[in-house]
Amino acid sequence: MGIREEIYYEGGPHIGDLILNLLIGLTLVGLPLTIGAIVRALWLRFRITDRRIAVMGGWMGRDRTDVIYSEIVKLVKIPRGVGLWGDMVVTLRNGTRLEMRAVPNFREVYEYINEKVAAKNPQYSAAKQ
Image (cartoon, rainbow, N blue to C red; front, side, top):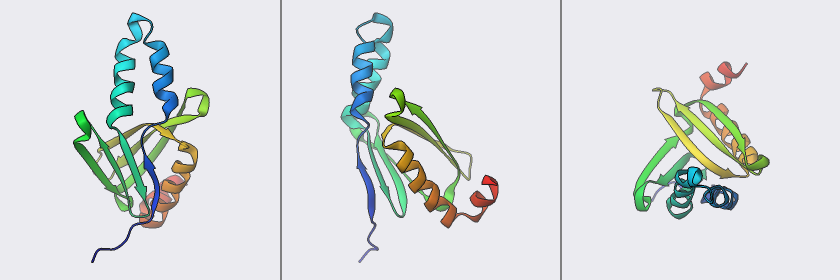
């Protein structure tokens, strides 16, 4: 019997990312951005729990990355779409970076993750000051 995880957020990217990029796609130059947004809308999924961050993505959603909070040393958020959604970059202890694009309610999600990381990784708290 495994330990139960409490899910904070589970779902895909913000719908505004797709809408904005579809509009940009009306120009030939914006086509690659539109294709990226469609792929994200179809196959990108986030699961943020009290124990970890899981990102499922890639072609047909076949890639999965799990990160536990104690491995995180830096967390950065970047607002997008007039602040309705945002991107996050999670840097791990080994230098690896995990990008999370078009996260809905990214400010609240950032605060939640920040709180969990500070509790699990004492080095992170010291680095923040």
